[in-house]
Length: 273
Length: 299
Image (tube, rainbow over all chains, first blue to last red; front, side):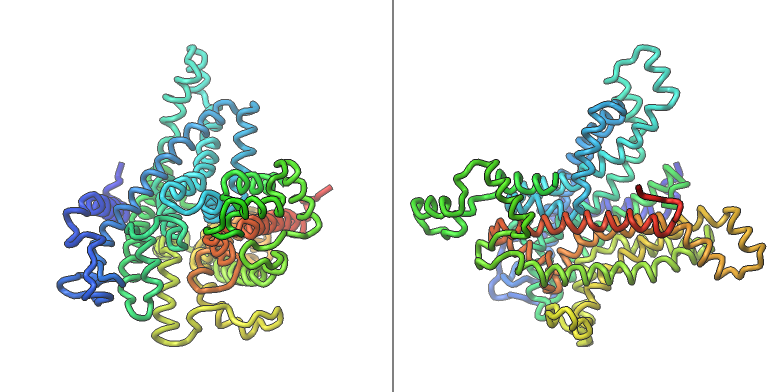
């Protein structure tokens, strides 16, 4: 496959693995508890005791960053997998029943959902249901689902027209088998590319909504929350925002590296669009 | 229309109780009931819906629950702020991004192209939030070049004195937009560089600059304009966050403030305004097609 000969991709995968390991092992790696307050050491710059400094309550920033990464990754993985699974299912069904009312309905709904930009869609969900963890998840899922449906449906339509689907129909394969086996396996490569690239979008939506005060509620640490708090202490404690922002940047950059390289591997022509 | 209905229904079923917001959290249930009666919230859903659409058509968006001010007045200045920012960003990005894309398409496949690609990924992946704060720390706090927060004087014609407030937010938003424009113009130029009409233009003895500008650019404008339209709506989304970071009193700040205060009529109105902007932009994009390419006609 040549995937590992690709340096940017290898770097991206290694980074992603590291981030995941760090997020999973956060309780063991963190020097302090993320909510433990050291009132005497508020807003301290990075030192040997607190590697990344402390926040306005004297909480250790390194520990908050590790736990924040954990929260953000958890939100990203949950919402992304929900969006990808449901989007793929709906997209495949719509693609299979192309030119029927099912497809027409799906296209209409997706078009309406995609009129609003992803971020505004997310804000709208939170506006209607109120801020909070589960509403944040729902907001990300609803913002990403139409994109998945659109992508998978268009792929599914072209696969539906190809000879091997006709052959298996002639052999008496059921729609369920054709959708699950033939069509699903053929959209898998583009799905993989988009999962990595839109994973970055999911994390961005989490950070943005939480930054706006509409996502994860404090005191739970998440990357968005660290940035939100840091924004209030921009002049006195810039290290807060610097470490929080670096966490987001590295995660998103790793995802983009892997996504772009996967795209090259699966479809060398595409680096045009 | 569908979107307005959707927003209305969603706010009706998903939102909290507007009467409770007006009454405040300590009010007893009788007062809430009284306010509910006054606001007409006890009427049936259809009556409320047509009442709402009717006043929308008459240009009346209702009053803010918190301040009591009419929303149509509340919306004006923020709308101007947001449009100002997004339009400047789109223009700047097109002016920088398109020539960059053309340049890269001439270097197809060589080292410059490859480097350009990875730089573009770096730019795309760099989160706007972080970029905004880095710029603030560096340019506003360290170098003291630009004001840290705010959006400057409000008047329509005082654009000149507002411009220092505009530069940093515009820079943050342009970062992604330039890359998107450059990528798209690169790929659409790759498609037409080998076309016959470009060869004809060259063999007529036109210099390369004219060939690109007159024959190339005009033919690649359609996908670019389409993209500019889609991007504009994306920009509206990102502007929500950027406005809140830089303290610009735009639509994004208005809606986030309203969400945090449960000011339902304002939330609803801003969402409607977003929808209307998106629809108008799409319409403009469609109309521009006919101007660029006379072969496209609307009946």
